[in-house]
Length: 335
Ligand code: NAI
Image (cartoon, rainbow, N blue to C red; front, side, top):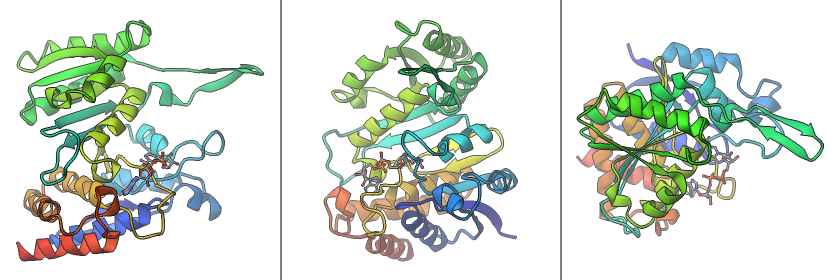
């Protein structure tokens, strides 16, 4: 019996990149039933909640979800679906590998970094209020439980994946209590993993170091907001948002999605790069234990990139989403 996976195509470029990704997953012979759901503005237009309960139920039932990006209204409107999903399903670790791609010229070579972002609290708790007109408060929630479990995740991941060093990134010199607690939990957990080097950097210095010597870092652990910003910075080190995959992981469920958003500026034009979501699908296949199919897809993606004949516009080429996808399918079939 084939496994069922929840599919959230999302909006903007989401439906384009998810359709392309499903096509290559099927090309490697992975047989899944897709349970597709609409969320965000499209769900609201259909008279539903932005994040209907049946979507959460579907992911809880299937345990795994492949997700396209979803637009979040700025300054008003519904709360981010992405944040709500991560909180509702307790997907506490956001894993974002950042790897230089062979054949893709960028400012840096040899970048091989893994970013782990705490995914459930910090300033994304969404607790904001107006004290008096002209003054608002936004609360940054940091708990021992969440900081400890994400630190545990990072050290376990390091051990399982041959990583040697984790750098915690914080601003504990200014936010002594909140970032201080995050850092303290990291240090406590690090004592149980003497085989993994543990150090820390202040977020501002870290940003400078990342754009000078990114190859000197191995794994980074950050609270939610810093992780959001730094993972886009890291995407920029290795070719941009079009190439950077991600996974949101918890004890009971996993949602695989690219780092990028819904890219309204290019939506519907057939030019979006589906590579980031395809690489997220490689992570999903590994997570499901489909190691051979994961390797086949990864090898095909690398083949197309190294070959350099078919590239999307964000990587300096002229190919559209469809052309790139078909090149990947041909590479899978030829292997
Ligand atoms: P964005 O990531 O959508 O776009 C930033 C820039 O990168 C744009 O110029 C876009 O054209 C380009 N880009 C992004 N992905 C690309 C791809 N696959 N191929 C080629 N070019 C690509 O970030 P932006 O504009 O800040 O956000 C747009 C919307 O997406 C917002 O509503 C935001 O809240 C939402 N968003 C959703 C996320 C999610 O669903 N996980 C993550 C990040 C943002």
